[in-house]
Amino acid sequence: MSHVLHRDLRNPLPTAVKGDGPYVIDSAGKRYLDASGGPAVSCIGHNHPKVIEAVRRQVGEISFAYSAFFTHPAMEALADTLTAQAPAGLSHAFFVSGGSEAIEAAMKLARQYFLEIGQPQRKHFIARERSYHGNTLGALSLGHDFNRRQTYEPLLLPVTHISPCYEYRERRADESAEQYGLRIANELEAAILKQGPETVAAFFAEPIAGSSLGCAEPVPGYLARLREICDRYGVLLVFDEVMCGMGRTGHLYACAEDGVTPDILTMAKGLGAGYQPIGAFLAHDKIVGALEKGSGQLKHGHTYAGHTMSCAAALAVQQVIAEENLLDRVKDLSTKLRARLNDAFGQHPHVGDIRGRGLFIGLELVADRETKQAFDPAEKKWLKFRQAGMAEGLITYPAAGCIDGKSGDHITLAPPFNLTDAQLDEIIEKMGTALKQTIG
Ligand code: PMP
Image (cartoon, rainbow, N blue to C red; front, top):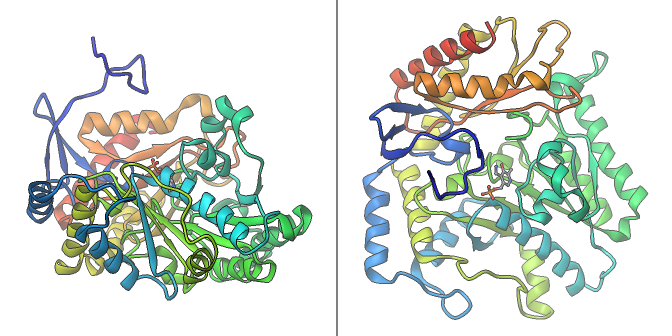
C-alpha cells in the first residue's frame, strides 16, 4: 500500500523512475513519449546536461539564501534575463515556487498598488468564465472551472467573470473574427461599469486559454481592446502566462505576438522546465515606482521565494533556449505538427477543432462535428483518451469540457521544444490509436 495521498484514491499510478529527453520511463521499463511535458512543464525534455550542471554547481556553492535577508547571483541574473526580453516597462521580477503562488502574489501586488496610490476602494477582481488560474483560494476564485471550484465555493472571493475568447463555439456566423473579439472584450467594459470603475483593481486573463479551454487563442485585436479598456478605467491588466508563456508559442512571452503589454505578467511551468519548482511575476515600472515612492516595501513573500537552485535551473533553461535557438525550432515544429495533425485528424468525425499557437496545440473532441455537440460529460472521453494514450506509451494533457456543454472535452499537446521530426510522427501515430480506441 502506498502511504502517499494520491489525487486518485482508487486507481494506482505507474511509477516514473527515469527521464530520457522527451521520454518518461516507468519502473517496468515502459517508455512514454511526453507530448505535453506533463501539464506543459518539461519544455526541453529531461536530463539536459547544462541544467543538471547548473543545479549541481549551485548546490555546491550555496543551497539556500533567504530572500528577505539576501539576494544572490542566480536570482539577479535570471531577473536580468527575463526582463531584458520582456515587453517594455516590465522590468521587475519577483520569484515564487509555482503558478498558483505567482497568481496569489499578483493579486496581492494589485491590491497593494492601489493602496499605495491612494485608491483603497479598488479591491474587486474580474476574470473570465471557464478559466483556470491555480488551486489556492485566491487563484481558484479567479478561475471559473466548475469541477475545481465546486467543493470550495463558500470559501472563494467574489469575482466577476466575463466571456473567454473562444472563437470555435462563440463567434457568430454574421461577425468577423475582429468583430467577435471586440464584442467579447467589450464585456470587460460593461463589467467594470456595473461594478463601479473606482472599485475594480485588476482583470486577469490567459492570452491563450490552456487547461480550461484547450489552447483557445485570442482573435486579432482582442488583447489590444482589453488593454484599451483597462487603461480607460485605471484597471490593472494581468496576463497569466503560466502555461502559454516561456517560449511555448515561439515567443518567450505569448502576449508579445499581439504587441500588448500587461501591467503584471505571471509565469511558471516552462520557467523551470520541471528541473526545479519555480514561478514568477514581472511587474511594470509604474507599479514598482508607486511602491518605492510609498511604503518602500512589497508586502508579500514566502520562505522559498527565489530559491537558489530554482533560479539556477531556470537561468540554465533560458541559456539552453538561446544557445540552441529553440524559439525558432518551436515555430518550425509547430508548422510541421499542425500539418500532420490536420492530415491525420482534420476530417475526423469527432475532432471539432485543432487550434493554438506554437507548440501549444489543442484538439476539441465532439460527439457531432456538424452541430459541435459536446460528448456527454458522464462518458469521460477525455479520461479514456488519456488512459488509452498512456497504454500506448503517449502522454497528452486531456481535460473535461464544461458540464453544461459550453465547451467540449479537449486534448492539449505541449511537447518539448527540442523534439525530433520522427518523434512528431510517433505522437501522431499513437494519438491515432488512442482516438480509435476511445472514440472510434
Ligand atoms: N495559471 C495557469 C494558466 C495554469 O495553467 C496553472 C496550472 N495548470 C496555474 C496558473 C497554476 O499553476 P500551479 O499548478 O503551478 O500552481
